[in-house]
Amino acid sequence: DAGITQSPRHKVTETGTPVTLRCHQTENHRYMYWYRQDPGHGLRLIHYSYGVKDTDKGEVSDGYSVSRSKTEDFLLTLESATSSQTSVYFCAIKVGPSGYEQYFGPGTRLTVT
Amino acid sequence: EDKVVQSPLSLVVHEGDTVTLNCSYEVTNFRSLLWYKQEKKAPTFLFMLTSSGIEKKSGRLSSILDKKELFSILNITATQTGDSAVYLCVVNSGGYQKVTFGTGTKLQVIP
Image 1 (tube, helix red, strand yellow):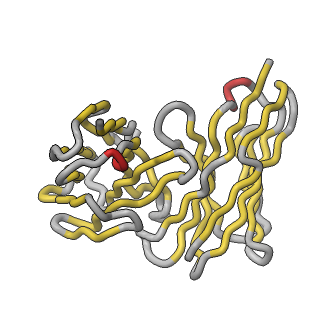
Image 2 (cartoon, chains in turn yellow, blue):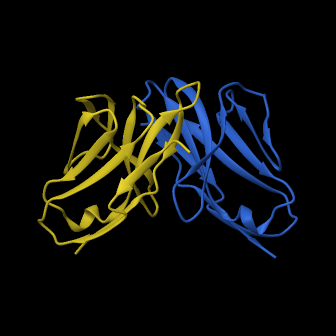
Image 3 (cartoon, rainbow over the protein chains, first blue to last red):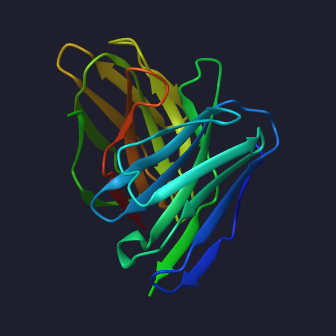
């Protein structure tokens, strides 16, 4: 168990409201990722972090921002939620000797009405 | 644009059957290919493959990579109902952040 948690696990919010999802890990892994998973699209990378205050965009970053002020926490913010951001969001960390294996958090189901 | 295609999209088999799941890819600067199993929760790691022709095996599951033909297969023998899940193929290319997921194969094993 790589000790990765996400909060909240479920959220319903209205269009136009800000939303922040939290990913917390307990093992000091350097790389952390946010994905969204939608039917027909698989998992798509939103943003990733390669250290404290070091973040970069993934393939579907529009409408999302991230912050990493501590090694253990990686926050994903939807500044003004839209219905197209209704999805399941997974946080992941890089583990394993090669550095390519990812361990995923339990996911957050977000519904924007 | 990097692409990972899995087939079939879904299949239904009976317990005890053997199944083969396929993953083909087109990426620049291939580094590794990984298989994950996703039940009704987060994906869990199965295998990582980096070299052609070397089979990875774990119990009834095995996988192999062909870097010349750009594909991998995941075999499951003597399937059980607990194997029912979506199986995801993921390719790492470029740096650590460059990952491309396939849309998955949904496997249903019926008693």
